Length: 297
Image (cartoon, rainbow, N blue to C red; front, side, top):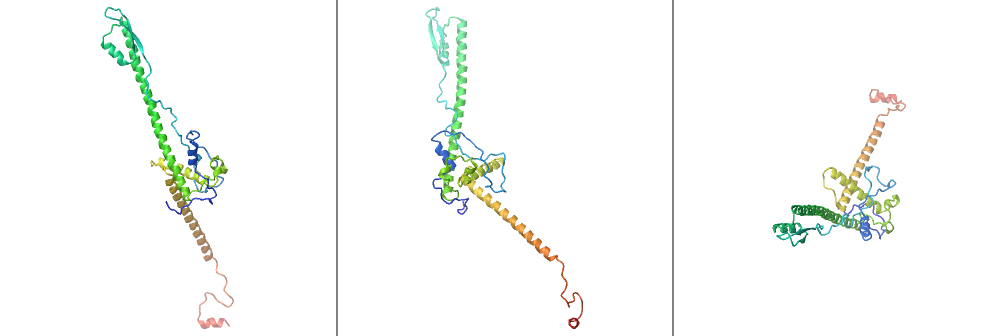
C-alpha cells in the first residue's frame, strides 16, 4: 500500500470516531442483529458524475453479523420412548409375567428364548409394536442428525463471518490510523447512517463509499468467476487504483480536447485572406532593383 494515497482525510476534529464495523461489535453485547442491508439515500451530489451507479443494488449502510446461529442446537440425541409390553407364559400356559420392551435389542433377546406369548395374535401384535419402535427410532435419528448437521454448519459459517468481520474492524482501524480513512465523529457513531445528511459526514461518507465499492467489485468478480475480495485493505487499494486510473483517463481526454481546440485556432488564422499591400508597393510584379527604385519616386 502506498503511504501517500489519502482518501478525503478530515481535519482531525473527530477523535472519538470509530467504524461502522466497530459499531456492530459494540452492539453485540446488547442484542443479536440479523444480517441486513438498508437502502441509503443519495448523497446530494457528493459522488463523481462519471461514476456508474447500479440502480438494482441498494447501497450498504450497515454491516451486521449475527452473534449466534439462528437455528436451535438440538443438543445430545435422546431417543423417544416407544416402550411396549408383552405377556409371557410358562410352558403350561400359566404364570403370566409382563415384560416391558424398551428397545429393539430387548425384543430380539426375548425372541431368542422362544417365549410363550399365549397366542399367534399376541405374537403378531408384539412384532408390530417392535417394528414400529424400530422404524420410529430410525426416523427420529435421521431428523436429529439433519438438525444437528444444519446447526453445526451454520455455527461454523457464523464463526467464519465473525472472524472476517473482526478482521475488517481491524483493517478499517488501520486505515484510520494511517490517515487514509477519516475517523467518525462520536456523535455520528450510533446515528442512522441511512440518513442522507449523516451519510455525507466525514468518515461516514468514506466508509460507505468503500463498502459499496467492495460490494460492487465483488459482484463483478463473481460474475467473472473470480474469487471475491474479503479484505478491506485490498478493497481500499483497488478503490484508490481505480480512482487514479479514472483521473488519468480524464486528464488525457482533457489534454486531447485542448490540443484539438488549439489546432482549430491555428487553422483559422492560417486560412485568413491576405490584406492589401501598402501604398507604392507592387505585389507580385517582376523587375530589377532599379525598376523598383523608380517606382518609389
